[in-house]
Structure formats: structure tokens, C-alpha cells
Length: 417
Image 1 (tube, rainbow, N blue to C red):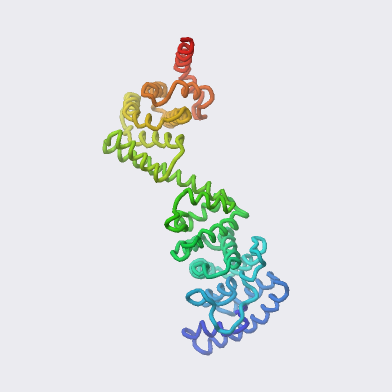
Image 2 (cartoon, rainbow, N blue to C red):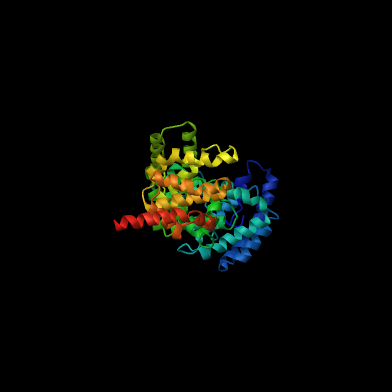
């Protein structure tokens, strides 16, 4: 192959499985390619020429058979033996490899190397799978043995390979191995990979790549005693990629909401007491905290989802009022501020807008919440003046005019006294 300056590579890989005449023929082809490619490398890293030689070599060499060796040489400069050290065969490391890129590691410089791989794999599509499933995971598991400079170059390359769609993020699962997680090796490498990816693409794009790569939780890359959302948030902000921290926080909040909604449905279905429901919610919040305004909307959704709404149309309004009265103590326990109260009113507004059967029950529902101390008169007035949601706004504002006027007059009367 082109990168070691000797055909011994072909011999060592094929002796066990290839007849003598076959691998000798391969070696002769290999020698020719080596000589041509070395000329390309020596001429100031002519990436286009190297790419062409690699593609030409694939017509005579069995790249699929030697895919692991091919990629180890391009990525690491030589063959890697179990344990992570280079094979001691007396062959010098290749002058063309990722680890021979400019120092310090640069996205712009390493894009040239990645482009070589990209063009090679586009020509020989069967090479994509061994790169993703074998070569990258193998090299990543030994990354703790490399110098910081080598680690940086390789991590940037992995980030670019994933961002350009050459491989999926599945290879990153290797970084969850215990020997890499300890001493922060995994998260340090992961931060470099993410930074390279985000140099050209958005966090939303990266999130999609992680999902497709079955990377479900970034905490698995942290040491067990540091698997905490706050520590993760701080780490990625210090690494100057706050978008990763923001995305993770939002994602955890979504998961927390789904968990609470599901839990509420189960608790209500089993007719648990108000005290047990409130205690369960607090327990979930300890695991995954939520902003108060997000929580109150989540509680409303969960409680309403537990109701069987398959009743007669002329009875559904009465059902809604009864259920709200039953659930009011739970909502009241978490309505801690005017801002949360407005968020609750908005949750009711959107719910009534989505379920047109109970649109006319909006004002009676609001009155129940007011009488049960879930929302205050100030919250209702503020909501009416400038806090409402766009969904059905004109209808709901018109419907609540009389209630708001009453509350304002009541407030004015109390002020006069």
C-alpha cells in the first residue's frame, strides 16, 4: 500500500488467507503504487495527486481485504497492534497521515485530509462500513495513549468525518469505555469532535447525527462520580461550545416533562392522594429540574391527559369543571408566583383552543382556578392585558371581559378602603 514504503504490509496481512502467488502479485502492484504515492507526498502534500493515486491503486489492490490497514496508515501513519502501539516491523511511519498534519490541529488543514478519504470512499463505497465500524472505533479506544497533539488532530478529523456524512456518530460509542471515561479523556476528545462539527453546521444538525448514532445521553462520557447535568453544562460552556450545553438542558427538560406527564397519568389512574401526587412530582424534579413555568404547564397536560373525555357533548363542560376542582390542590401547590399563574392560564387557554368542545368552558374553568387559589386576580388581569397566547386570543379575551372588569373593580374597591 502507498503509505508504508514496503510491500511487507501486504505480505503480513495476507499470508494466512491468500495463496503465495496471489499475495506476491499484490505486493508487486503495491510497490509501484508506493513509489508513485511517495512522490506525491514529498511534493508539498499534493492532496489531489494523492487522492488520484489512491483511487488508481484500488483498481489493482483489494482495498476491502486490507481496509483496516489502509485506514490505520492514513489516519495514524502505520499499523496498530492490540494495545495501541505501532507494529514493530522496521517500517517508518507514513509521511502522509492525519497525525502528520500541521500543528496545532486546524479544521481548515484537516479538511484536506478528510477530503481525500471522502473522494476515496465515494469511489469505493464498500470502504465506508469498515471505516465506521472497525477502523475508527479501534483507533478511538487507544486515543488515551496518544499525545495531546495527536489526539487533537484525530478528534478534529472524526468531527469532520461525521459532519460531512462520511461516517455516522455510532463510532463515538467507543468513547464510553471505562478506560477512556476516567481522567476525562472521553469528554475532552468529545468536546474537540463537537467543536470541529459545529465549525460548519448547527447544533440541530449535530443533535440529529447523535440521535442517528444512538448516542442517547452525553453523561455516559463523564466519569461515574461526575455524571451530573450541572457539571455537563459547566464543562461545555468552559469549552466554548455553549450550544451543546443549551441543547442538552432543553433535551433533559423535554424528557423530564414526558416523565412527569406519564407519571401523573398513572397516579391519577390509580386514584392516588393529592399528597402522594405532589410528593412524586417533587421526587421527579430532584432528578431533572424544570423551570416553574414549564412545570405548571406540564402538570396541566398530565392531569388533563388522565381524564376520560369520552362523554356526551352536553356533559363535557361539567366534567371539565369537576376534574379541575379535583386537581386544583395539585396545581395550587406549584403555583408559586404570578409568572407561574399566568403560565397556568395560558396552558388552560391552549387546551381549550385545541379541544373546541370545552372552549365555552374557559371562563368557568378560570373561575374554579381563581376560587381554589391556583391563580390570582392580578394574574388574570395581566394575562388579559398582555400575557395571553396567540391561539384563539380574540375569542378568549372577549369571553373574559366581564370577569376581568369585575376583578378590576374589586381591586379598586379594596384600594379605596
